[in-house]
Image 1 (spheres, helix red, strand yellow):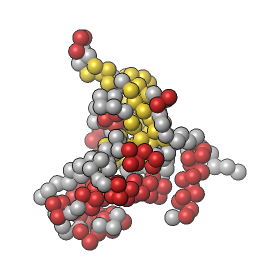
Image 2 (image 1 turned 135 degrees about the vertical axis):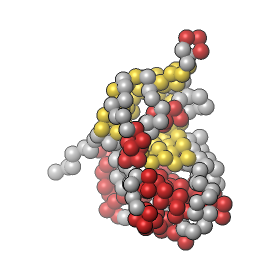
Image 3 (image 1 turned 60 degrees about the vertical axis):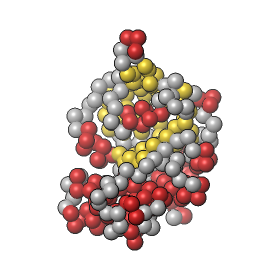
Length: 255
């Protein structure tokens, strides 16, 4: 018997966000609805000012929407208002962030950059360092655990940043231009890592990108135009949830 369809990890319904009022008002998001399922990597495409980063920041509970409903990992967190008062804890528990530039703290070595997230979540120093080294080894940069960020190549620094994003085992990962500063080879490595994470950790990954090198790496592409989803301009392969989950289960079986 086929497995039941798993619920979406990210579910957005009619989300809106504007900045300013009156003549200066700008509608950054207008009635956006989408779902992202476990094991899926989706891309957000669109011109500058189309609302991509605004949407990512709303999903990450950094920006407060002006209306709509948002469910993260089965938890309704916004329904025309925040339903959680502890947004910092929510982000620590559910969301990992990856940026175009690694944003590693320059005065901490690689292991401490990753471990800091865990200490903020309540881990002791020894446990945080052990988990950090485990993750750095997983991403094949463990030999650099005591190096400072300035001593790393761009690709190595980005892998450390991904390790940091995964430190607290979030199931929702938000990436803002994660490969824009990398060449084709290193961009491919990063996307392979994200695919591995999505499959092995059953995570949902949303990536904002202009990077044409990785367009073919997404399970689904959402194209934003003037704050609205443009289905006709999606331009990517679109999976039904059952097809995507079957693919993810098959990939996990081969890992």
